[in-house]
Amino acid sequence: MGPLFSVIIVGNILHNIIVSIFKFSSNIVMATYTISSQPFYDNINQCYKNIVIIDREPTGPLTQIVKSLHTPRLSPFDYPSPCCPVDRCIKAIYKVNNTSELMSPDDIPSLFGFLTQNGYTINTSLTTMMNESQVKMTNKLICFINL
Image 1 (tube, rainbow, N blue to C red):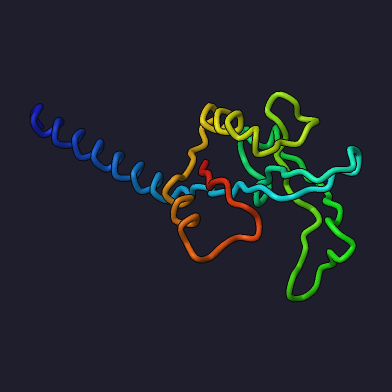
Image 2: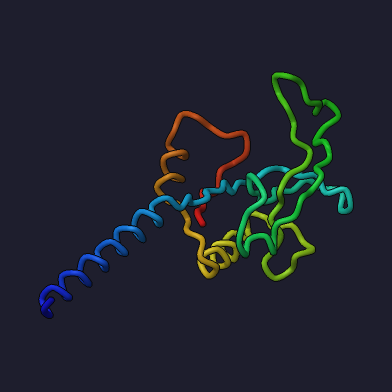
């Protein structure tokens, strides 16, 4: 066994390790979340306002500013039905610097800063596709994000 044979063996081992890492990393599922805005009736201040929500419980640092919130009816005629279900428990996003106050669309720049600083990616291609689509979501779409 000469030095050339040892280099070939080491080269093959490194190649197999790289292929294994690539196969492993390509199997990792990236989480995609929907961030949107919806009307909310503030019982304390007796007013309607738009708040920022996420479609489900997130993973990662975003959990620090997301809390479950029971939403009151927006009108006396706002009842769920088989054709129009109403989810009264939502995942609300709170202000980055004040987690006792709900985030409004005016706070989106601080949300985007928080997301990018914490490893989330704003999926602009998916957001653009949905904004240009004829299919519209119930709540006003802000963006899709990935972790």
